[in-house]
Image (cartoon, rainbow, N blue to C red; front, side, top):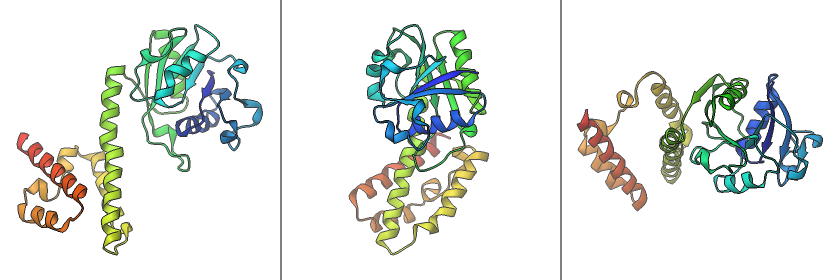
Length: 253
């Protein structure tokens, strides 16, 4: 049973804490955070510390901190030759301090503190410097998820860019759709079945096969009507850009 110390108290850290404590195959021995009060609802105070000098021995030390803090925090760890991993999608494994063995434990999901997730369904992307450490991370990952992949730093960077497109950008488009609804006294809930169906379709079809709409049909009459309707400059430019992208993509097929 791998012993784990989590360092951090943000969204990813809190979801990892829940996943690790719910697994009967992982021993979460401690969480280190600057403000332990943020975690008091999750763990007994005996498992919390804000001081690196009190850090306990573990098989894996998981740095669930912001991307900009990973390198600095890894340099503060008061030990050497231990397995230290970060959880970032965009930071290279080599950014970790060389005083310890390096790895990556990247759960590919969007996390919010107030929204529970089923960790068993979350892909966990792993990377390590050697086979022994990889096997340790694989054991840890398979103890809380059914979806585990070996992904290099270069692949993970590409995956993170793709994730921004399919998650962050899509959510921003939801926000624009919500604004348009509100401006026209419409309930955003009217669009939720469409959102759900679109998301469901790409579970069965390729994104290209699932594409519909006026740009897919090159329906210039509808496209021009929509552009006339849109008064917000940013909304109009986004509409134009995405329409052109869809049309150009169709030409490649």
